[in-house]
Amino acid sequence: MSANVTVRGSEDVTASEPTALAQDRTVAVVGTGTMGQGIAQVALVAGHPVRLYDSAPGRAREAVDALTARLDRLVEKGRLDASAREAAVGRLHATEELGELADAALVVEAIVEHLPVKQQLFADLEKVVGDDTVLATNTSSLSVTAIAGGLRLPGRFVGLHFFNPAPLLPLVEVVSGFATDADVATRAYETMKGWGKTPVRCADTPGFIVNRVARPFYAEALRVYEEGAADPATIDAALRECGGFRMGPFELTDLIGQDVNEAVTRSVWESFYQDPKFTPSLAQRRLVESGRLGRKTGHGWFSYAEGAERPKPHTAPPAEAPAKIVVRGGLGPAEPLVGLFEQAGIKVRRTRGDGFVELPSGGRLGLADGESSFEYGPEEIIYFDLALDYASASRIVLSARKRVDPETLNEAVGLFQALGKQVSVIGDIPGMIVARTVAMLVDLAADAVDRGVATSEDVDTAMRLGVNYPAGPLEWAEKLGPRRVCDLLRALHERYPTGRYGPSQAIARRCAEADEEDS
Image (cartoon, rainbow, N blue to C red; front, side, top):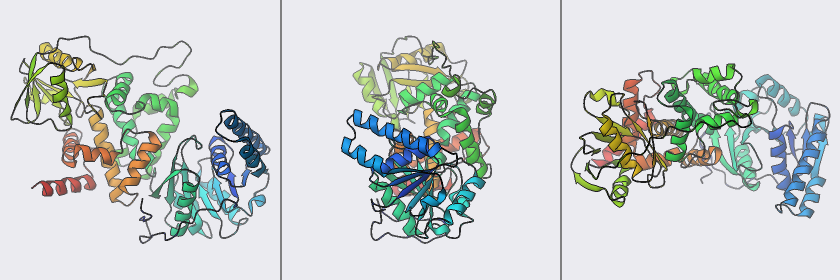
């Protein structure tokens, strides 16, 4: 990956030599909660002397004991040599005064997400440490520029956003504030590489890369739920079993904490001056207000009480598959289905057309395009959702108007069941579930790249490693083609004219460029 990065308020810069922090230099961690301990463990295992500080008396000492116990468990599991454990414990120290951090080469803050508190901490640190000490914040939601705003030397300040748990997750967002010096960002980047992490460079923007680009994964699921098209279990199953995502958005927000996830969404929305693309969900707000915060309270979208059964996704009963179908035109990203139908023993005849499957009843089966079935009046149109890989997908989602002909619906269900898929039939909603989610992820990712937030490679890397996406959004965009993404967003925008789905200039530009190349 190139060391070039565009940072707001600076010219493009290139690091000529790696400047990773020397292993014998001291790393200080301020804040000894879960994240602070995790960051300290990473630095310690990388070979640095580490000092822990916490404003609460005795907390730093407790953190040293907890970290020592963690190292012991690593030895028991064979992941750390006993001699390395002894050496690491010898480099780990608790401190009761900020003044004891004076010789630190790097100070990483992991305290409460409250701007005035962080600003005061760094103002106090600047009176203690040397002018060459790099100061870093692990904030996930506050402006790096704002935290450094009152410092005498804001150029030596950088964001190092680790993901929890820090010892296990490889991604670190290296965030350059408006005043961050280029060599400081490079030193932080190379240091993270030296610690065995996968760093990505990012400009200081609300949500950085991951928390900015990931908003549609939650928001579109909540929209589908709020419109009554599907229940949380079915939406989760669609994104897992069809979209290839590791977890569905409802179970994932239950794990994260509904209050935490909603707060991040609200923070990004407010930071972007209430841009409709980031509008929070009223349904999630009500869940938070009710105290159903997820696993930590025993109930969120789902119940976690002892013996509670998780709701199952809606799955259609067995239906008879049609013996033959007609495929009119190409199916775009769903083209692999044709071969799968043939392998299942279904006779396929191909003709020219606009890209749909014609069923024996005369009904049409089409890939989600942002339109609704009811718009076609008496003509029978059933939509099927986008899949990451139709061959490996274990579930297919269908959408139809309420008065769809039962014969047509049964043919559509049976057709996909013949491929060994479970089938979920949801309400008539534009863009379905996976397709609209992916289109919005692509839109925000492309917009971030065009605005100089990060490179395409770093955006895709961040989304794969930070939130375990099956593919980077821009990688998926290449597979789908910008024209399909743009058309789907425009169709959604026609049906929801709030500005939320209007294609960004980044996507519109890519679409125009692709059209020029094709012509």
